[in-house]
Image (cartoon, rainbow over all chains, first blue to last red; front, side, top):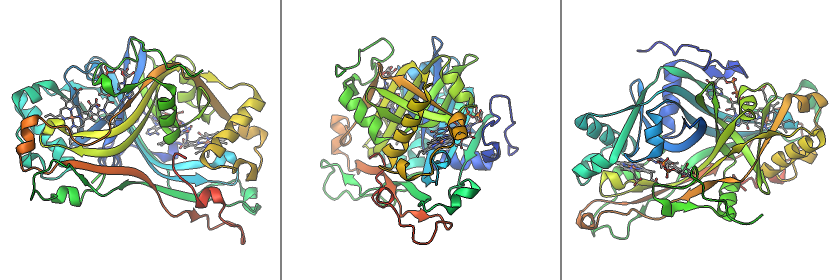
Length: 218
Length: 218
Ligand SMILES: Cc1cc2nc3c(=O)[nH]c(=O)nc-3n(C[C@H](O)[C@H](O)[C@H](O)COP(=O)(O)OP(=O)(O)OC[C@H]3O[C@@H](n4cnc5c(N)ncnc54)[C@H](O)[C@@H]3O)c2cc1C
Ligand SMILES: Cc1cc2nc3c(=O)[nH]c(=O)nc-3n(C[C@H](O)[C@H](O)[C@H](O)COP(=O)(O)OP(=O)(O)OC[C@H]3O[C@@H](n4cnc5c(N)ncnc54)[C@H](O)[C@@H]3O)c2cc1C
Ligand code: HEM
Ligand code: HEM
């Protein structure tokens, strides 16, 4: 499936719609660049927004947590909105109103399902670990049966949603460019610090490449 | 008001409750360290999660947007959940299940109100700009009446919610410490890059201190 997502009543951008994107390449690139997401669900008619890690496999997005989690349970009982956002920069303009942000974000709508098949679930969890840290899963102590029982993996097909992107410098009112006010962009990015080895690592255990060369969001 | 938030049925942590905090100091510090939030609202029974900037004044949290925004309109018509998250590090353990994240997050519940009084609204928007960039608002082209009309400011009293914090290294099963597997933490932070002046800045306009010394989250 490579056709773009349909523009629905729910997903259509009404504000600054020229910033909207519905093609899968753009949506997938944002999902892959930011593993953090915020999942919204409704319980007793009220909204909850739970920060969660997501990973993508083809046209599906997945996330995981405790099998006893209220969030995960609620997320399979009704629709969710899964939102991924990246802050690329702060935009400073010559008037208050034209201040803005350079951002990339995705909002996805749908119904989550539980990955029930144990072999499938195991594979998905391995993919999650390896998405963040290539090759790590095979180096770990194999999962105990009770680890897997304690874990729920949810999935959702990417069928409805939108991406929104802003880039570039400030866009001021024409007459304000004559004012002696500093305008511009302050870039922001997620910075990876020096890894901190666990003091209990065994002697001679070396830092693996997936840690040494770790890049946030691939 | 300095007493902690009440532990309600909605806000009480069921998973890993020892990571929960209800005192205002902890909650406020997280709100102040991360201006980005995700606001969840319900429309036609379905959840939406909108990335938004928030700022705190005392026991209130505020956000802004277009007066025509569907999100902002919906957010005053029913309860919202406003979530702020900070990723401080990735935690690598010796088994898949004990992988984790070092994070600070806040979930707040309540009903948003519109800041209706024009003078109050103007002041709040000035506070927003100056929270991010100390002293900037007074240097800007003063807001036009139509800028303010186009802008809605929402507020919410901080009365119900929780913070959740994880810090430190991996916590593995006792017997797994004998395994020759690298474990540890990869620190993450929001990094500020070199400011990019707008090519249309007037000659002789210097970069102000609030840009030169900009620190994300104060
Ligand atoms: C980090 C960050 C901070 C932001 N801060 C603010 C802020 O402080 N104030 C503000 O007004 N706006 C902010 N935005 C933009 C905000 O997320 C909304 O796009 C905007 O508020 C318009 O919302 P709306 O519901 O009125 O839009 P509408 O255009 O009515 O939304 C209709 C549909 O468009 C799509 N859509 C809308 N917004 C997005 C999005 N961000 N990503 C993907 N799809 C989207 C969705 O499918 C949505 O249901 C921020 C965005 C990011 C990423
Ligand atoms: C960046 C980030 C990524 C995360 N990734 C994952 C993940 O991939 N998988 C996963 O299972 N969990 C993840 N978490 C933790 C997740 O947000 C929840 O805390 C956890 O899933 C338990 O949810 P629950 O609804 O079952 O918890 P419960 O304990 O049942 O929640 C009850 C109440 O506790 C409070 N609460 C719960 N979680 C939080 C929170 N994070 N911040 C503030 N208050 C809270 C709320 O008031 C909530 O309504 C992540 C957290 C952060 C900050
Ligand atoms: C530094 C402070 C500010 C920041 C970081 C900021 C950021 C933003 C962002 C990210 C948006 C969303 C744009 C989009 O939908 O893509 C927005 C919208 C908006 N902001 Fe601000 N803003 C700031 C200050 C202000 C001030 C002071 C005003 C009013 C005087 C204002 C008025 C508006 C309006 C009216 C919109 C809606 C635009 C539209 O949908 O057409 N903003 N702002
Ligand atoms: C690198 C990959 C992983 C990361 C980044 C990660 C991250 C997290 C985070 C942040 C939480 C929430 C903890 C909290 O509530 O404070 C969590 C919970 C959980 N994770 Fe993972 N995880 C990963 C891999 C796995 C794997 C492979 C499994 C199973 C084999 C697993 C099983 C669980 C379980 C069962 C919980 C619930 C803990 C509880 O609430 O008691 N995780 N994970």
